[in-house]
Length: 133
Ligand SMILES: [Zn+2]
Image (cartoon, rainbow, N blue to C red; front, side, top):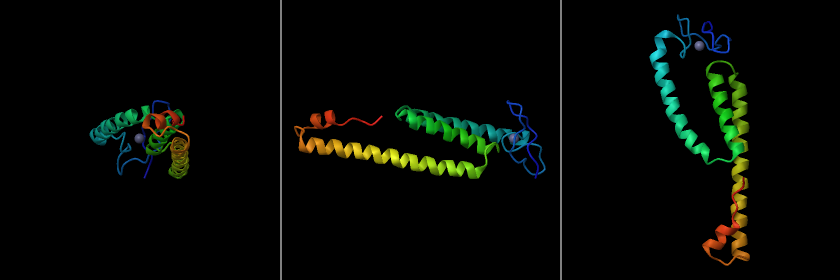
């Protein structure tokens, strides 16, 4: 197998493997252009859903989300080694778990405050709960 012969917009050669008996990878070979375009459109649709979900995220989670998408593209074009991306994905998963644990702690604390010192109403509960930023 040889490398894709496409020169990317930054001047580097694409690092993805060329398709068997072809000069380009799945994304760049003229024969697979239609499939690649469809894949890109699908990716675009999925990304717009992600963009909506991302708007509600705290800033550090948005940064993480953006970096994961970059790494995804870099693995696809051979710019980033898959084992490095795998390690990044594991770290990101741990980070998300820590974030979620922090949020659960904050909610429990708000419930405890409402039960112990609050006025016992939903409005009292809401006023004591502050979403972690
Ligand atoms: Zn390529």
